[in-house]
Image: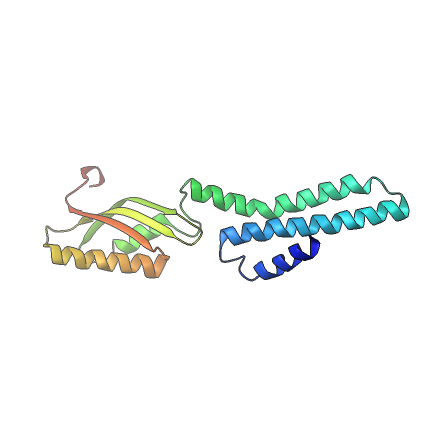
Length: 170
């Protein structure tokens, strides 16, 4: 088991930073590997030196190590499940950048969340400065979508446009 876990840890090591599921599997296998090594060392200490207290001490230390290093995975998972605004995303910065686009009066009702560890979603309302035709509206919307993708790494975007809409924002 120790060798299989160690080989698996080495295989997953390269990809663990790119995918939350792989990182969780990596940490699980690393914990198993450390536990196996700790059991072997603890057994040797008990056998050679009659140090029986080493067993619970090693158990506690391995447990603390696993909890310490998996907390980040738990936190990221909770953030995804709770649809929290992803780290590094500043809603005010998004709003102020989008509002620099000609034709946009304001951006409001902004919701940004992470669906997976790599997919960021946004939905928002764009209040346009003038009652324009569909072609102009699509051009403005396209500029906003491009800015969101290029500047903020947001890949799935839903923008609702209107003119003199949402009176509470005016």
